[in-house]
Length: 329
Image (cartoon, rainbow, N blue to C red):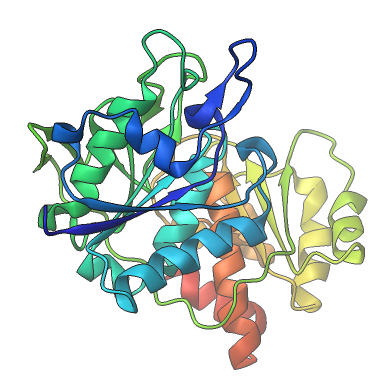
């Protein structure tokens, strides 16, 4: 019990009590009290974080969690950090935390967890998820793996995880990648090699990034409208291997001339192949200036573009610096 873990509690369903007369959110300390003492595998320091519901969590709150986790390990000597989070956007926050972890990922475990069932509901999965997450964060086996999501005793790499089922307790999946590991008997059992560490993030991420789902006959003016509204970059959710409607090509070209990066992701699982390396007839947006998301899901490509833009702005590199950064993902 000599290992120290910081618990950052953001509320949401894992802490929610819907019972009459008890409606409200359990604090970080109350979440710990719900776990039998023998199942807590480290000395845990609870800390409550004011945060929006997961489905409405702002980039600034996500960035705040990432910075707090990093500083807890690098500056305060914690062996690990656990973040309780709503399930709706946990995969985005996990990936942003992973991108910003830097050397903290080598020194301690960073685990995000939540629950599908409220705090005091019969059969709530919250206490078990939290106990497993504390054990994982404290275990040296997780060092170097980066941020992970812990649910139903399984550990999912931030880069691979997605919420596949909004109702089932084992709602998270890493498919088609493997589950990174599992927690058994209070210890981590690794099952797969972690994904490569992302490029270093230099500077503060840019939060004004738009995510646009494409569809046939989409109005190209949507792209310039979000830029006029302040977006410094755009992620387009395309189809297949990274295809977007041809009607957008002129707008993508114009944005490239304005030094506004446009990243193309897919609503499907794809390989991490650059658009320009795809077979003839696929990924045509790359020929007019778009940047491939290297296999990232659209919501994670948005996080990656936020991070890349921060470094590009700091170094004055603009769109080409973003392209180079994505090339190292």
